[in-house]
Length: 299
Image (cartoon, rainbow, N blue to C red; front, side, top):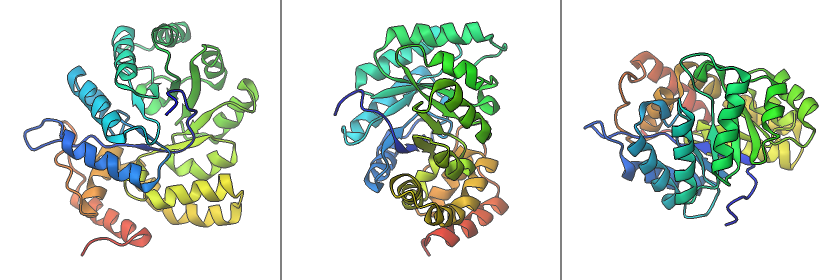
């Protein structure tokens, strides 16, 4: 596969499973990755929010990146999350991802102190100079604590291999504005699950989603209806069917809800890493009902 193949479509974000002794379960990770690839998603993205990136040490992150690339075996692109508090560690993980065969990396600026735009720009520019991989700039102030405006994201896209934007603020206006300031052909991706239909309609190149763990068929069907067929009536019907689940997993927290959903569908994924706790029983039952409305569940 061409290492620099453009990303598009449904990008499945993988859960990081843990064993009962607290260690990362690489065998289970390979199983989850294989299942998602087999479902037909267009790319795989380990070490995102669902992958519990902030709760992993360097060794675990490297093991997950390498295991994912091996499990995918070049069938679809792999985009690895490499974000860290420091530029040096982000650069380190980007180089590692390139060395093990990833096709792209994703960076969200993370900071204890609020960074200036110049500090964020230099952060991306320094990492970009250290790798030839395409970089997705990830804007999610709810998790990273920093908000990058469409105008600033357009500036980041002037860095040669910063080629993509993942917009997760939940504001569809941001996506339209990004196209205005960065050009109609800008490669932006939706990171707000409940906005998937609106984002595709606004020109999103793809949808970055952990929902592909639970309802891969519906996520792919939405992409086909709205992007490949330009069938907005069919797309709305497909989207409305999955919207309750998309809203639920965002509200409940992706690692908690996706883990619980996989368990309900018959796949044991082990405990979450502290301080994360399992989804409360009442919410598990609510999730069971939602899943039952969109797909059959084991008896």
